[in-house]
Length: 138
Image (tube, rainbow, N blue to C red; front, side, top):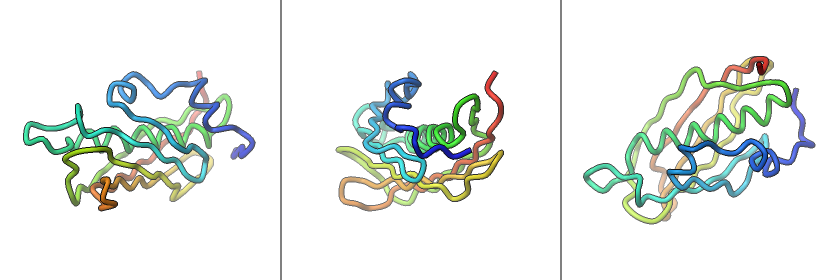
C-alpha cells in the first residue's frame, strides 16, 4: 500500500488542503509518509483571551494526520478520521505554531498519527493523536 515514490508536495497541489486549512493559514513545509510539517499563525485563530484556540490545534493536527494518512493510502483509497484527541499543555499567544506529524501505526485499514505542536520558543503546546480508516474511494 505504501508508495514512497509519490511526491507529497505534488499530492498536496493536486488534492488541495481544504477550505478550512486555507482559512486558518496552515502552510505545509514538508510532506512525506514518514514526516509532515506545517505552520499556522496564531493571529486570526485565537479565543477571546487571545490564546490560540484549542480547536485550532485540533484542526491543525487533523489536517496533517488526515493528509498523511491519505498519502499513505495511495490511489483509489480514501482515509477518513474516526478518532481524534488532543492534550493542551501550554499556550501560544503570538507568531506561529509548528506541527510535526509522525506515524505511530500504518496498517492496511487503519493509520494512527501523532502530531506535536510547538510555539516559536519550541515549547510543546499540544499533542494530537488521530486514527484514520482507509477505505475504497467512491
